[in-house]
Image (tube, rainbow, N blue to C red; front, top):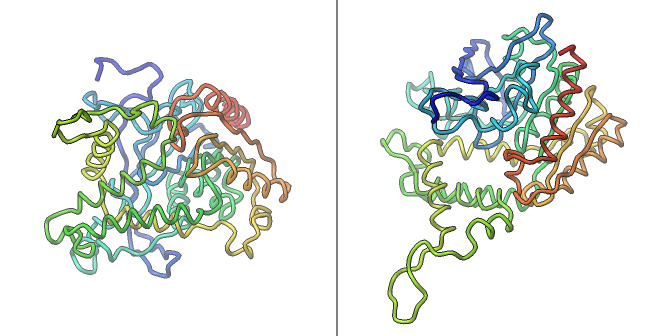
Length: 384
């Protein structure tokens, strides 16, 4: 970490906590008598509280979207490329809020939290969640902050699903919905990838039916494999080939050589998996991927997305990426077609990018330009 922070950084940030003692009845029918959300904010809320932007994170994300927690941090928050002074989500103009979702493992109430009824970690007994549950807790956070209407709600991947659910559940509480690399529901292939990852976790001998904390252990090997499976789907074939090709990290194909062969890509995936397993909770991973699988925006509208989107009252900005095969551009176009069918105002950008699903996190000139121009228009609307 350099001695000084970049000029376009939000700087040093400190997470905050909302303790909610108001019972929360979840979509599954169970009730949490109390819970907490950890969140971060960047920028300043204006006098009429009209310049607030909510960031909804994806599967492995959390509240730390931008800036640094200390001068010793080796890298900033997960969306620092697009949040900060002069960036697409300009903290000179917006007050930005990013919470860690309920059920997560970075401070918000989840499977590693203590169940007040048992005095033990919730573990696998933590109630099943739906995307609408996250939206409800985010609405309560907005109430806590005195924000009646978000200037925009922004999210990529699973975060984009939260954005669209917001547009239907609280149509008057957002002016703009920014949906990036997302879909109205998962494909069967996506559900299959998630189930394969969950099976890898549950097959770990240290899983103990999800009660691993009671055994003072964690299913790190299974969680690492789950992350490796997911990571493969986030990258494009082009990126994998360009970054690693068939380069060897060790060993040899020469005749007579007994050295075990290890490809660079194998080493990379193991590194990613091991790093993730040391920072993420296995029960949270299972819980969140199932919420992702369950999501179907139009289910209660007789599976008619046009009927679903007819309830929205905001403008939409939809972005997809050409090599994203986890959430392909065709799924974003389906969303755009439904929005047009519902006569909703929508702007759509399909970005040529070699980076696969991870493109929504990475620097890209065209993506950045389109994102920045759209958000500048949002800022002008609220007088910023």
